[in-house]
Every structure is written in structure tokens, then in C-alpha cells.
Length: 74
Image (cartoon, rainbow, N blue to C red; front, side, top):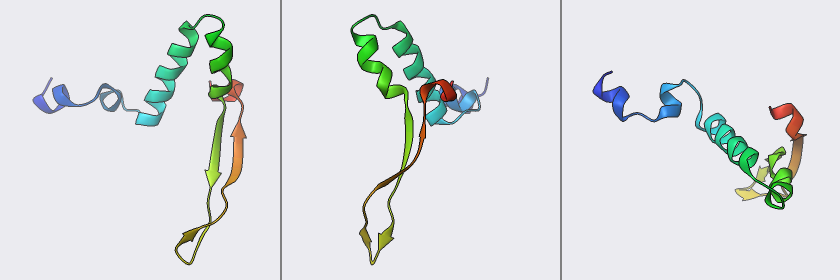
């Protein structure tokens, strides 16, 4: 293994994005939780996208454009 690959992040070596890597790590941590922490962490699995339209250099009101339930993200 070269020195550059040795110092690179594991997620980069694996060929995935940081968001995918962090999502996988969060999924593993949530899978290890016991009650009552599991119930509290379950809603955090949902993924949503928020968009903000900018006009004249000022942000407008944020709008949730898409909600992905936890079953779809796995």
C-alpha cells in the first residue's frame, strides 16, 4: 500500500462518499441500542431534503421537498 493510500480515510479507500459512510456508521450504532434509547433514536433514521430559494441575496422560507422513510434508505 502506498503512503498516500495509507494516510487516506477508510471511506475514501472503500470508494464511497462521506455521507454514505456516516449513514452506515449511524445505522450500526442505532442497531446496537437497547430500549428506551432505541425508541428515541428511531425517528432520526428518516431522511428529508430541505430547499431554500434565495432572492436578492436573502434566503426565503425553507421547504421540505422530499421525505424518505427509514425502510427505503436501507
